[in-house]
Length: 401
Ligand code: LMR
Image (cartoon, rainbow, N blue to C red; front, side, top):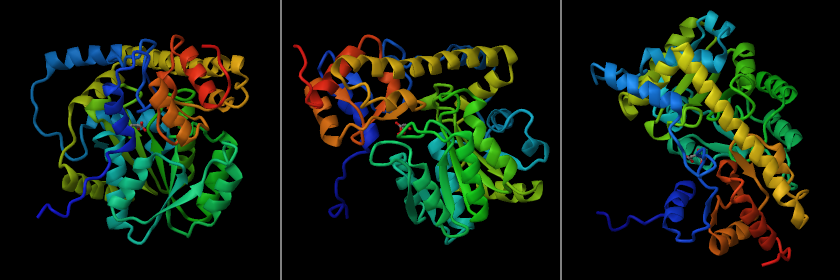
């Protein structure tokens, strides 16, 4: 029976974790998978998370199922975090939260919901986008198309993006990245969000906003600008939110599928369908991560400590962007890679070609996605001179040995 089954290469991003682990080069650098790293290259447990876990361990009384929508204390903490504490959308009872196993789980729930409840609607993603968007939506049986996002000079191609979205057939779904665009790091300005909103409204599209990096761009509220604008101005929006990065709880698989509907009644209808797709996929989400987040966000002191630590992480990444460009100055490459200083979030679309990425890995033990996407959090003051020199070499710049 299994004879015809072919072996396939593993996921390109997750495969880098293993390849990096097996590399014996003492100077190796991991710029691959999107996890935060401190200046020692570690991904520590956040202090507020540790404190919340200590409390949970002490106070936990049961491990019974938490229901297909997850823990209410999680949902009612995530909604104001994403939509704003004073959101008119929340006031009107137009939004619901369904806890999911990570942001990826939320995307899969959204995909199954669209395939079942909105059949015949295609989905449009940016070119490039997080490669798993392709897998998730096509696995759900939805036809996928692309709209342009970067131009040949590795800059945001906003005109191209808008013109393409204008051509999307009425009623289709358009996927937007709320902030920290993965993989490029190019985000939309407030004016650009407004312009996209007009087109989405005019074309009667359903926006699905992937919000995996809230707090890693400019701030928790700043990064939510597009999400809140769309939720407040449009009747219907789907949002997939993740706590993996901003709480650093990657392996606890904690995310949320948010529906914004025209009114409370339609919201309840959609919400009831979300419970069905959750039940069919995995029944109930895991509890630990959502308990951590609920514990933190419902305790003002702990929430303040978490915000402070997240700010430190964000500032570190943004500082490294500038330090990277500076490290390339001696090689005359600062202008070529100036985009890294301008992009936002964890990732940079560096403009390095697949061949250059291969050379960086093979000759220097520097790992990044072949598209040229680098995880900026993998830079450190210590490894930047080494990375800069390696980039100079693969660009054909002569360097002193
Ligand atoms: C990434 O893009 O590196 C992260 O979102 C992790 C993943 O699951 O791919």
